[in-house]
Structure formats: C-alpha cells, structure tokens
Length: 196
Image 1 (cartoon, rainbow, N blue to C red):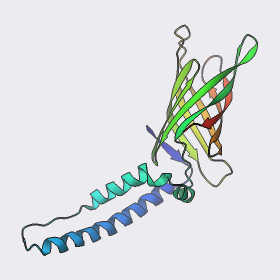
Image 2 (cartoon, rainbow, N blue to C red; image 1 turned 180 degrees about the vertical axis):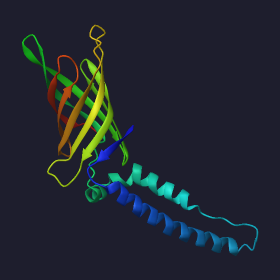
Image 3 (cartoon, rainbow, N blue to C red; image 1 turned 135 degrees about the horizontal axis):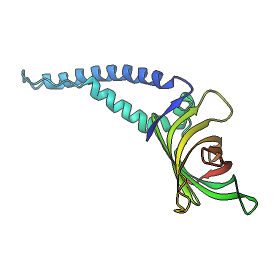
Image 4 (tube, rainbow, N blue to C red; image 1 turned 30 degrees about the vertical axis):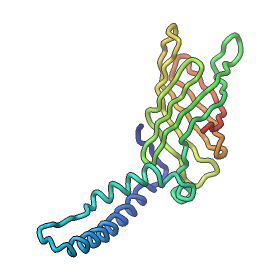
C-alpha cells in the first residue's frame, strides 16, 4: 500500500481531534488508575497510561475502521473505494480492424491514509504506484492513480506505465478511463460493478 493525496486538508483536522481526544482520555485513565492503585496502599507502584499509546490506539482505530462508516465518510468527504470491482472495457488498441474489448477486475484496498489498486485484465495486470482522491464537494468523487503494467504474454513483454481515472457513479458502480505510455500509446474506458 502507498499513501494517497487528498484535495482538502481533512487529515490534519482529524489528527488534531485525535490528539485532543488522546490527551483527555490519557488524563482520565491516569486519574482512574491512580485512584485504584492508591486504594492498594503500595507507595512504590506508579502506573502512567502513556499519551503516545492512547494516541496510537485512536489513530489505528480511525485509520482502519472508523473513517469507513457512512456517516463519518460524509463528514470527512473521503469516498471508500475498497472492494473488488468487475466489468468490461474497450481499448483504442485494434485487433483485426476493431477496437479490443476485454474483461477487467480491480481489487482496491484502502484505509484513511493508504491505498493499493491491483488490476487484472485478459492479458496483463498492473499495480498502482501513486494515487490522488479529488474529494471536494463535487457530483462524483474521483480517484486518479498511476500504475506499472506487466503483460502475461511472453512474446510481447512491453511493460509500461499509465494513468487511470476512476469516477464513482453510485455506491456499486465506477466508470474509468486510462491511457498508457506504451508505443503506440493506447487509451480506453471501462465500466465496473462492485462484487464485494
């Protein structure tokens, strides 16, 4: 997985609130622990609930779970692309005088800070190298990502880079467009439905 950019500064705002919650929680937990230990009357035993530990726990919970809840996602305005998406595409590459059609499968793993996109098509697969989510208040949320592609066909070992744009049409539908750096350059589009 790699980091992805956002078109707003929501991560800094979320981090600020996690720090505030960590300070308050750490203080309350320390007071509670001191109250319990104080009743044991053991003067040399002191327990301090670390602010860093509380912060790490809250950050992990937010990064991996809390941000995905629909109500939280609406507040942060970060779409959740996680899932397996399947569909069909059409390339500008021509075979026997017609544009090439292909089936496509994209698996996206995402948390609040990181993302990975793995695409499988009929004769190649690719991995994302960078990503950016355009999440300001627009009609459709958009994920832009760059990728490295490798072909399954050993006769044509032309590895290439490319860029893809994924646009969320509905909760279970994405439209995409891509272009490649290969020679000759190809481009295409596809429609995907979320399988799970």
